[in-house]
Length: 216
Image 1 (cartoon, rainbow, N blue to C red):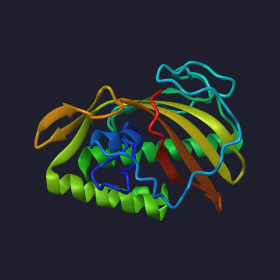
Image 2 (image 1 turned 90 degrees about the horizontal axis):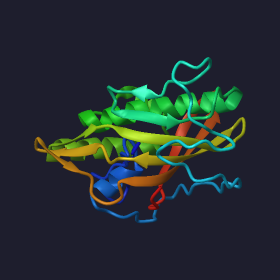
Image 3 (image 1 turned 120 degrees about the vertical axis):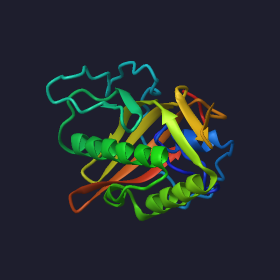
């Protein structure tokens, strides 16, 4: 739903938007399991995120305008975050800010079939390549995405060098527009995903965005 295109199929993007997990399902493909960058093991076992953003020990819905709260509404990019940790600090805050910038830019790519240059500073070269491939596929087949993806975010693990986020991507209000004709996404409408960010030289970058194939 934030979506990253899957490697086994250029047109599949995880949009749920904007991202990778659902997008793949949108094209009706299943994960090939050939990703060389396996997601690191997350030792914590937090409750599964929900699209409604129900509170958990480490994250809960952040009221709009709350002091220190991160931005949660991105209407131009087409996604809304319903749940985030309250007033995060330190590495957690910086990692979440980088993640949200990534979602903003990657969702824009899915809507326009053009990859903004800023994605290269927010994602690993491997992910950027996947978006470049997906955008080319979208252009050649006249595919765009519209509507709004809803994302619930929970911090599963964070250290000065690495952060793991568990998502629930809800693409029920997202549409794939093929040659001007909108249609609902195929496959899972709500999917769990895992996002890994790494900190190198003071800059947080998304290195993994993986749909689990499980509903939420």
